[in-house]
Amino acid sequence: MKITTQDYGQFLINGVNNFTATYFSEIVEGLKHDSVSRYLNGSKISSKAVWERVENEIIYSKKGYLLFDDSVLDKSGSKKIELARWQYSGTTHDTVMGIGVVNCVYYNPELDRYWIVDFRIYQPDQDGKKKYEHLQDMMLKAIERNVKFKTVLMDTWYAITSLMQWINSLGYKFVCPVRSNRLILDKWTDVDNPKYRSVKDLPWDSDKLRQGSEAKLKACSLKLKLFRLMVHSNRTDYIVTNDNVAICTPEDATDACAFRWKIEQYHREVKQTTGIAKCQARNAKAQRKHIVTSILAWIVMHAQACVKNTNIYKLKNQSLKEFQMQMWRRPYTVFT
Image (cartoon, helix red, strand yellow):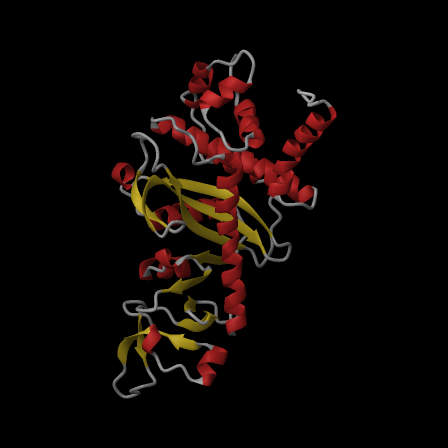
């Protein structure tokens, strides 16, 4: 039996906890484990397949956003797997053995809908690229593909001076958090002899808290706006942007940051519903193909969930629910 992308994708959509090739061969009559392995190690499927799947489904907005962030596919309990390396995971807040994936999501704020449009495997030992360079590659590719967006949203890890200036040079806006120790030129404490201070040490009066403040980052030529956001009693976020029109108040900055969480939602859903991190194949080619097919499976489920006005978890659980209902109607065993 020859396995196709349709077959493997359907297996991931129907799966619950076990997404291994061994389990696939056990539940499909006549399917051999070697057939699954041949699929995973067969013809290459690149990230281009993701774009080809969604390009006609995206609904654009003049206020559209490109969201960038990375995620780690945990391989801690696995044997030696190519592409896996020790790296920091935001999920565990620790260093784990895993495969890093840098993702690009398009978000339409008017419809509150989002689409995964591109991704890159983080493998600096092979291609020498840093995560922000993958962001640049995907942003240029999005522009080439005529993806209509106005603003880039990214995490603290990407708040690099050179990247901010690069995005600005292309004519796009960005909004991103910076660390509390990021150096900002303090024009208020000493007007005649301003010095650089960490953002947490700046004098935040009521006007700056209400309207934001002009910000000059060290080694950055851009005129930026800085906002201090009280997330809760134990957390304060500092947000910078080059958008002095749409982002005028802390509320505007808060809304933009909330939009960025859509990519976190994508990370959670693709991991929990497709088994994207569950493949135990050791070679890089098989891992790549599993990752691409997992993303394609998520795209299918996400689109169906939108059509049915439900969420992806309820959609996926429906098949299990139908099976359980069938077992109630026709139980295998009658207890007396």
